[in-house]
Image (tube, rainbow, N blue to C red; front, side, top):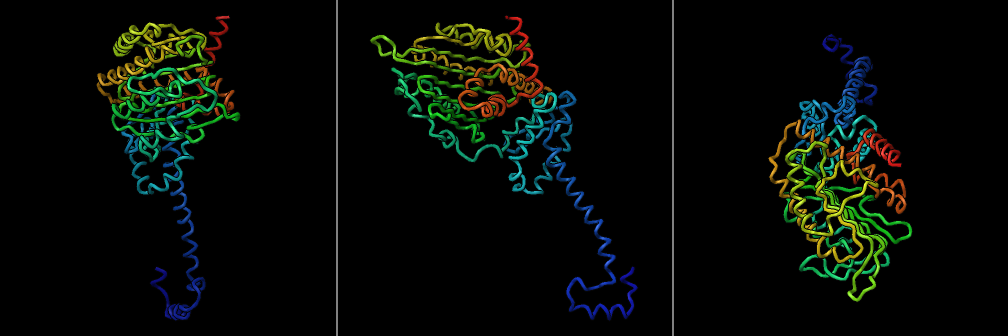
Length: 452
């Protein structure tokens, strides 16, 4: 209205100011410019709220976790579409967030992803039932967290498979698998055998990002090292592998396979092979002796025993029955074998290395095959209740293992306590949450007091 009521004198004044600097034009309309300032602030505020919704509300599950996890899981969708941010009970809003992310641009998201993931994990550790109650911990399955390497390139990182030990070492006397040569490291053939199995038998296998400080580490003395890889497939959402080399003092191969939650209460496949104090045996056979501990198990994620658990126990039991040296019983020194361990565990304690080639290697191959075949007998169930039950069971397993696993003490001594904490809680058992860990620690202390 004001512009339409300009007088001729006003228009002449405007004509005279056309060649003036911008800030001197239309001095009589300055109040209009000032009137636009609130609108600018409103736009900035709207943008800030929108970004906070995308970055904070879309990533932090603390609001749902405090409700006891009743709405912990809204969606568990495909990895390639990166639909692994779970807002309990809010699937419609989640879809809206993804559309807004797309409009904002993938580059901005990629720049901020790493920092937000670290912050998210801190939040999850502080809320009741945090990681255990929320599927947000599975974000490593997103495309952003799958490293841009082929499986072959990822396999070769840090010089794997190693051809020599970092410390003084006695080579094995015989090959462990038929058709292979003698390996310079005791359990390295198990690493390569498993990698080949994953590549040949799993669908859409891809490497998963591991923090660089975790993926490889040497101790300050230079006589011990550890390497960690992680993979994902359509059948297993996480398969981690660890090799620890300290020469004859210690050789360790460890692996854990987490079935995709759509396969319900399927047990995880746990593999733990250890050798301590290796030395040439005092005989003419050229054998090597030491202390050897072998564990292969289909580990249940819930206390309840259902048909699939009974079938898995029978399946693993048939393997155990064929190898005399692998029919031992685990002690209760570190673990409560009634929780998250099966009665059919393949378990061996030996002092001669000969059993590695004759019994452990074939049992290892058969166990991988049996677990995958077991998974294929289970019809996938993508319902919210089934997914939630599976995820909560795997999180309970991680919380239990993060407290009980004796590896933390070993790695604290070798690489420092700070690194060992990060290794245990952010790689080995990253679904563990603070509250569940405290409860597990209390249970373990109570059991020790009772035993003494």
